[in-house]
Figure 1 (spheres, rainbow, N blue to C red):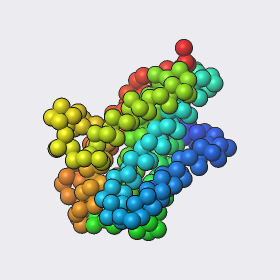
Figure 2: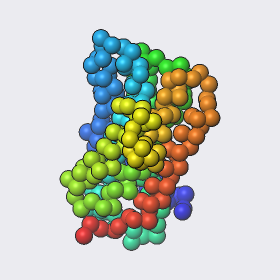
Figure 3: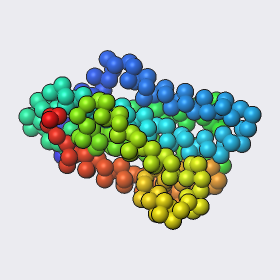
Length: 245
């Protein structure tokens, strides 16, 4: 992997996004709007918002980054840009790392906006440090970026990229422990939830919700999410295709 090529790729992606305000708005504002909507859905029951708001701070950025990254990467391939780039000395790993860096920078802004809005405007109550909450939200957004880069290799159109969402995101959403504790699920479902990264993101958020200090469980959960994002990025580089058949 070449650092200068990675930085050049990230700069190119950011320049392209600068001319696409709708995509930037989708990435940065949708999680804020969704968490705000949720707050007022539970306006008569603020305890419910406190119980699930932290978890959704990680889930909303993951979903948004997954959609935007998968479609943006697929557009590069279908337009022929990817084929031209890979005809240069740019390696697949350089390309994936550049995309991850560019979208990762946007993920930092996105996570900060969503977390700041939830804590200081919507009065989300957490026991632990807001910085730990931000860390998990950021790791989740990076995981969504990695998953989006990975699945884009298997889609032939933007419509197909969107169709991957029910297959990749919805099972994790249902089994992550947001709706019911994972240890109360059927044994087979609990075992499946143990291998899904979103489960550890929700567990990490719940650790911040309940504990004032960084716990060993929090460190474990955060590391699992980070390692999953890294592993998916490696798979994304391995499966990246020059063009759509």
